[in-house]
Structure formats: C-alpha cells, structure tokens
Length: 150
Image 1 (cartoon, rainbow, N blue to C red):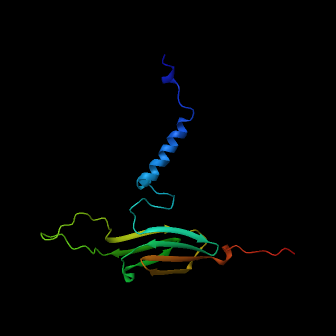
Image 2 (cartoon, one colour):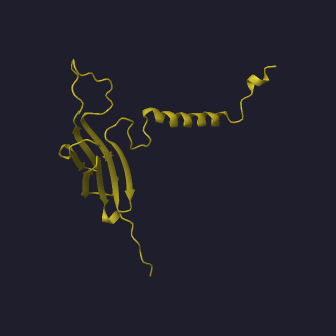
Image 3 (cartoon, rainbow, N blue to C red):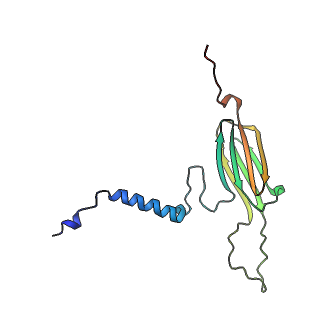
C-alpha cells in the first residue's frame, strides 16, 4: 500500500543537479564567483582575464572614468587597478528625488594575481571607450619555443 512512498525516481540526484543549473541560469549564481580568480557580482570594475602564448591580458569594464583618475600598478605579481568614479547624479534635495541608484560611484580597487611567468617590466595599459586593457607580456624564457631536432 505504501510502496510508492518508499520508491525514489531512478535519478533523483540528477534531477536536483538539473534544477540547480536552471536556477543558476535564471538567477545568475546569486553573487557567487564563477571562478577561483573572480569576485562575486557587483565588484567594480568588472574584469575579464585571458591569455595568449606571449601575454596575459586583463580587460576592466570601467565606463565614465576620467583616465587621469586611474592608477595601474604591479608589485610582486599582483596587478592593482585603482581609481575613483564620480557620481553624475545630482544630490538629493527637496527639489530632486532619487528613486533608484544602481551605478557605482566612489573609490575602487581591484587586485589580480598574475601568473609567475608575467614580466613586470613589460606591462602596458590603455583606456578607450570605457574599457581599460592591460597587457602583461610573458618572460622570454617562459614563452613556448620550437626546438629543432637534428
């Protein structure tokens, strides 16, 4: 009589995993980082880190920032992006009401650990169209090279 209550569907754990994947797609992981080097949602500036055989590249999405207020530095393998973003919204007064404020304003700082083969003497940064692109070239001895067989 109660057999149906004691039987579980064949792959109940698989169903839970599927449900979790669908929930993460809908809600975007609820602020959890997507990788070990990433911060949760809302970190500013949002970054993308990639690599090529000859360099590591970091793209920081930082629209509306005066390039003179950006500071990029590297020390002991840590790349630091710091700066300040001004608030372009008028201050709230008796004549101005602000109903929503989703844009980040203020001082920010992001620190990114670079791989050991990054050459701190060969780092370049350029800011264009709201994107800060930082290229850290790899050390010559760390680059892949072809060895001729004799």
